Length: 376
Image 1 (tube, helix red, strand yellow):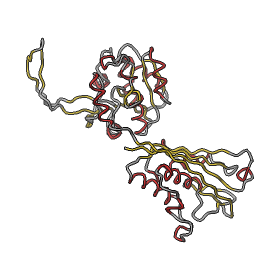
Image 2 (cartoon, rainbow, N blue to C red):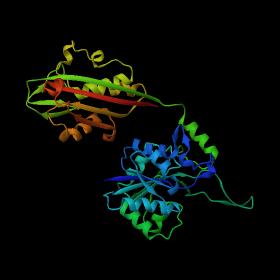
Image 3 (cartoon, helix red, strand yellow):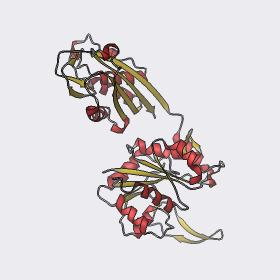
Image 4 (cartoon, rainbow, N blue to C red):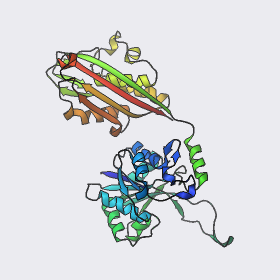
């Protein structure tokens, strides 16, 4: 199913201090709304909408990246409806609606909501209320409140798109959240376990708590790789794990997958861990004709063992022939499977050298790659 995520950041949010709406204040060096968007990208969602106050267009553009920008309304419900209307007719089947003020939403929580949408029309995370509850009046306790069956609501709240759009169109307004809108339309909403770290930033002290949850500065490493293989006899070339039909093959000690070799070296480089030749010496006969996915999986495993995750990788193949475009999707999928990440974090593209040099003369193929590792 095609899924989009709406990040609602159209409020004023001045109670958190700082003189600007909280969604644009930095948290660990990144605007709060930008962190919320990044959480959904990290969960593999590529179709994102950022709803902003009309006065905050510049701040929204700075934080949005590739997210669609939509101007919000006077209330939260109006802002959500504006985003839903912007997505109407675009093929979206499921939608997650999330408050930008919850920038630390973990990927596992997003996954739980999406999993629940496989069997339910709507799902939302919540935490069971464990504290005693009072009803107060004029600063005094008026009565105790039974906490049985009570949940503290969180976001993202997920829905089948057509159902929640129809519910918002029919709702008179004033709802606290989208679950309230859904229930008014008779939509059953499944509860999934929330996460304590998915806090909502409301007051100044919430920024301090969020900073503590973020911990120290992230360790971000970037590496690059480059490889070349010459053409020789054969009827196909192995490129990024895909056998591409061609009138010649590539010559190498292994299967000569120039794309995988460059990417493996990029990961090793980010780790300051040598290169393929160090880990798999070409003089060792056991690697003759070996599948290059062995090398790439080893590099990815070394990164995981040291506590890093692969944030993204990019491979550029340089050749006149064969044509790469028809196979790029399969290459991305194959690399993602070997690396254990989402295809949305893998880029494969191609260029020619304008018939200059050895690649231009059709003597071989070159590949450049980059990889970014992040810890924790």
